[in-house]
Image (cartoon, rainbow, N blue to C red):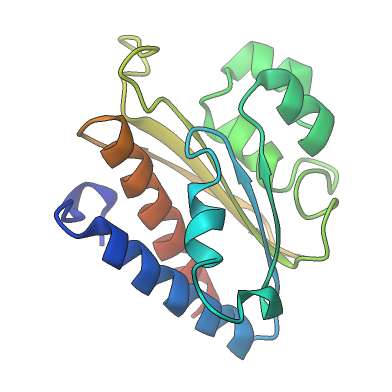
Length: 176
């Protein structure tokens, strides 16, 4: 399901259902999840911890809103932030895994991680990166990280919810 096609009317129920499905997939593979979130402010972590028993498959989440927090907590390179910006697939990949096993996988007991960084608005957008631009990355231990950029519509909360759903959908797909 593409990020833009998510119905906004009952997105909270959708997030809970996706979190449950993600948890089942992680549990089936005996894997744990760590998250690195920026514009969603921990919304993915909140969704997964709605699920009873999530401690069996969810290890931790990092909310790194500032660039300095991305550098200090996830080992994102200052050069990456300077060259590509905080809202970039390059930063999202470094948040999730990094070039030399940095990021959320290094700082947790997880084998799977996902990251989100974007512009939820209503301000902060530009012609190059308008409000609703969100970059994602996913990593599984001993595999190459992958990334994507999506453009979501709606208000700040809707953009954050759509980004949360998209990340979980992509993690579920990678675990199939």
